[in-house]
Image (cartoon, rainbow, N blue to C red; front, top):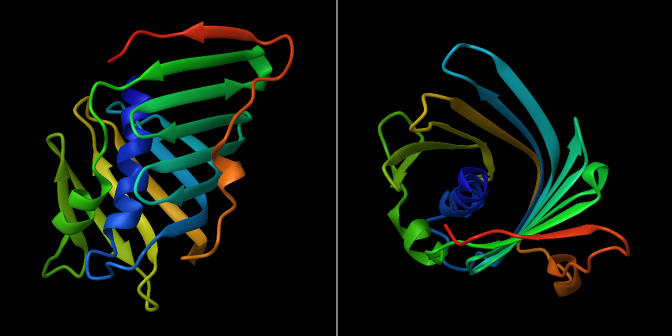
Length: 178
């Protein structure tokens, strides 16, 4: 369930970089996610993220394995084609994107800082004020860097991209709320 909360927080933070831009309604970007364990062992993922305020997200992981994560309010769906499995779960808390957006503040280092569930996040923007990188260290000591590229803001994203229909024959797993 930690992974689900991480994904929610990451999208929220992508959007929170625009605390001064109350008109932000969507984001689409390629991402590279590098998670380095407390022992210094890195894991690298890449894919594409789609988000629409206030609470729709799709993470489309491409490498090293294909995985799709759909989030809406506090509902999470994970489709793992290699396992032929779909997991459904609910988070106890609904993510309030608007309050997170308003909480990020520019600091002297030029980054935007915010704290979500006890974790401090640093957000960096490029010269065009688009998010380019998010960094944080989780409660387990793992450092995560999320690099964004080909960022498109306020692009019309078809609502159907956030809807998931399980393929025939996959195992359906219902997870407890966390």
